[in-house]
Figure 1 (tube, rainbow, N blue to C red):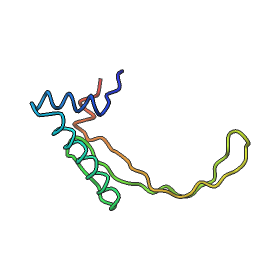
Figure 2 (spheres, helix red, strand yellow):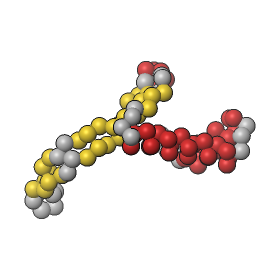
Figure 3 (cartoon, rainbow, N blue to C red):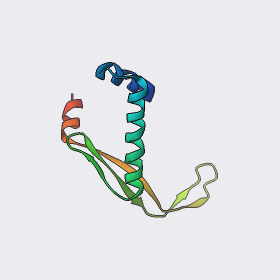
Figure 4 (cartoon, rainbow, N blue to C red):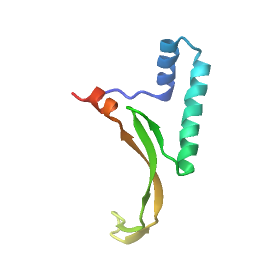
Length: 94
């Protein structure tokens, strides 16, 4: 399995779409910024067939420091989540 970096993805898209790398990178950055902004506002972003991005609240909980065994308090937080759509699941299924 190979990791694909943002730069590599931009290169592949620029070649596939016959666009400049600068234009493709601007679109990718804009898309990431807008998805982030929508999640910060509490909205869900859905790409039909691909998947959806949303946020989820994690309650405060108690944890344990593995080095010392000391109990620690872990604060409540909001985390991003991605749920793959049916078309994406079917495409990667072996």
